[in-house]
Image 1: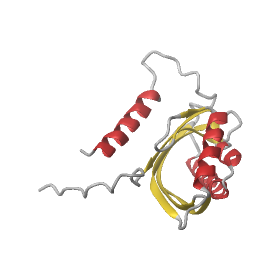
Image 2: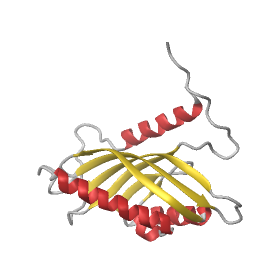
Image 3: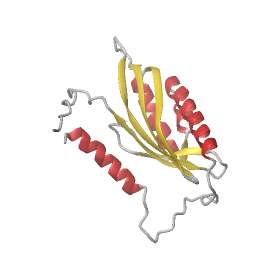
Image 4: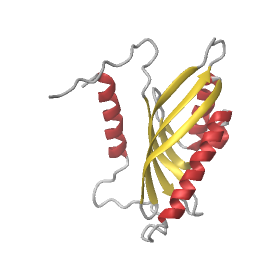
Length: 184
């Protein structure tokens, strides 16, 4: 297994472990509606609307608007960066990222799967975009995948509680990953 795949699998494993509680430990984050069945169609519409708002915020480089999609106690795990905890830290991280990216164009999110529970939802998808950093002669591209763990808020809205973003582009200075070997 290549080192990049090991890094991705390790990040996902740490995220899953970080989102679980030992048995017998009360979950103080559960909302009062935790046992109520979710209106799956309404949840899907809400998350689709939030994805659309995030697309606009990301394209415009609006860190405050993008960060508003996250719960107050959210944790994000952006590619090639340390996790950021809490909405203020997430906004600060997004602001720094947007400054480095420069002009963003063609930002797209594609939801691949969405599992809805009473007060939680897990979304898996892919992203792609072009960006032109200051001084660059041509746009650069990035694409990858994401996992958003959504949580219903006390006001009934849905916010990202945890996310994992994995770029499929090699880090600067690295070549592309070797082609996958075919198993017989």
